[in-house]
Length: 351
Image (cartoon, rainbow, N blue to C red):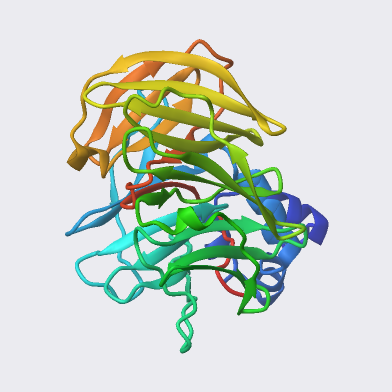
């Protein structure tokens, strides 16, 4: 390939797997420079967002493993053991958000936030001496997004001592800054649980659900351009049991699996059109699931089916009469911080 024009080399290498790109950087100085440019990383990332590059990351007390997805059975393939590149205690790591191969994680023994690419193993600590980038489970919320300038950012909503604060971290500037956060005073109650942020169409979405029967449920939106927050209604689901909303970006459309129930759970799938929710389908009640098991569940949507997965494999499948999806779309339960679906890319957690 030495005699090929640089444009041709660019086109070829933006189509190879991320790990091949990593090895190719050592070929020569010219290739290292080319494969490290922002344009190359951006184009390679856009071409990597396909099903064959998706992996499942699972963490337990003893191991951290990465699995391919077997699309014939929609189950996990053979695992590869991954060594966490940062200090931790018994793999006590929470996965809070993911985008384009980057994971935003929390080290639970120090509460520090990190950006981590499990494919390249590169990571960046986001904590500062003045306690920015410190995440408290069940009080805070985090979302990862990229702006129009391809700057990866972390939105961190903090609930402390009866006050909400919000901060945005910029990968480009390596800096946290405070932004105004306006919401109702009653949402400060610890009875409200935030979902991880879901990035879709220039907006970060969170569900905010009150953890008792008949409680208040809303969706909080953050416009990444204006950096303004606003609130939209939750889908009109029955309030006869606990309610949770699980968000997923499917082809740049926001969908929600709204669950309600007690011993049996009913699931409705909704799509957001402007500021209104449209019901896509209703599922029959699913078998009872223990709360301890819910803590390790990740949901996948693909090809007209919805899969409920655990670290042990597929738990059950719900068939959906809806348009087929070309790849898996991860939907992580708000308690499910021990697993993630990610795409193998060379996106760096730092500049």
